[in-house]
Image (cartoon, rainbow, N blue to C red; front, side, top):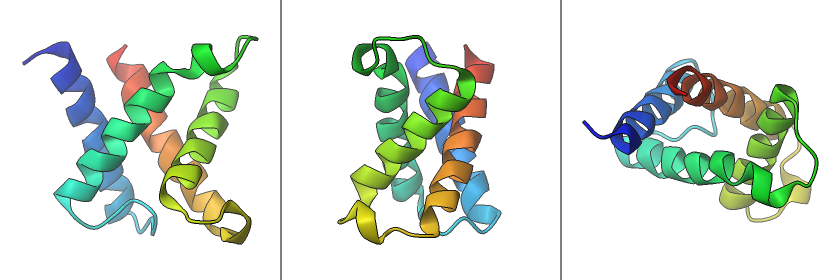
Amino acid sequence: MAAADVRRSAAATAVAAAADAGCPVAGVSETDFRTTADFAIRRWDGTTRRHRRPLTADDRVEDLAKGLRDRFEGDRRLVGPLTQDYRFLAARIAEALSADS
C-alpha cells in the first residue's frame, strides 16, 4: 500500500473512531469518513503554506478544527458548541497523522 493510502486509511479510521465515540460532526458513513479524512490531510499538509510562523502541535490541531468547521458548516458564526466537537475530531485526526509521520 502506498504511503498516501496508509495516511488516508489512518485518518479515515480516526474519523470513524470519533464517530463511534459520539462525535456529531464526524459523519455517519464510510464516504463521510473518507471525505473528511481527505480534506483533513490537505489542510494538515498545507499548514506551512498558510502560516508564516511555525505552529505548535496545539496550534496545528486548532487550525485543523477551524478548517473542518469552515468546510462543513454553512455559517461559522452559528456553530456554537460544535466547536468543541470539531476540536475533538481534529485532535483524533492529528494523532493519526502524527503517528504515521
